[in-house]
Image (cartoon, rainbow, N blue to C red; front, side, top):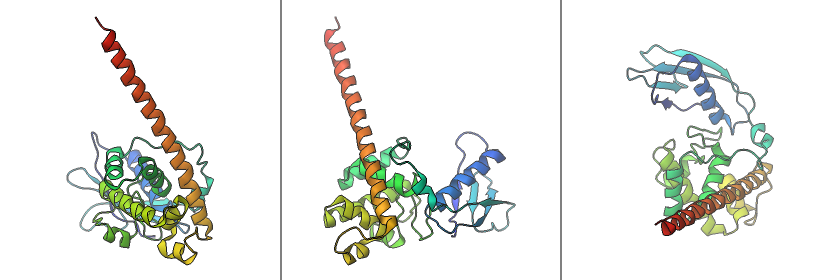
Length: 242
């Protein structure tokens, strides 16, 4: 696996060595989520004149740097080991981008949330061994088709993934089938008569996304009910005020 350059900018304070190491570990975890053959990875870290920390698989030229040798174990079992019925939902990241893409392409927000969670666990720098990139794990051809110039830009990646899901949903109608196409490609789905291909990974992917979709949808319904109740309560208080 080849790591892609990744940049992290401190928000409010310098990052000490321990925190930087933790960030590197998180980056590597994101990159190897889909890899079944990850080994020892050499990551170069350097800090530029603006205090921005950079991680890359390529040795920086003309700069001082540190080498982080981090063992990324076999990660293929990660997804199968997760209890998808109970794993915490992620509802505090990229919500503006998700809402925008859902509205623009007519895709349910809960479905986008589920696919992002299943594909990358919301890690914007995730890269699979097959070359899929970013939050929605878009392949280079898909990126080109949907004008995604930077797959590690959350807005672009989510818009591209939502547009691709819209196309697949329109083509196949059935959720099981269009999710299978998102995972294994349209060619595989067509080859098997527009059914889920008999690939264990694809079958597990469809199961995983449907579980997450149901949970994110239920979470959104609870949130809507709470907000509606707050509006009703506030309205009653205003009406009854002297």
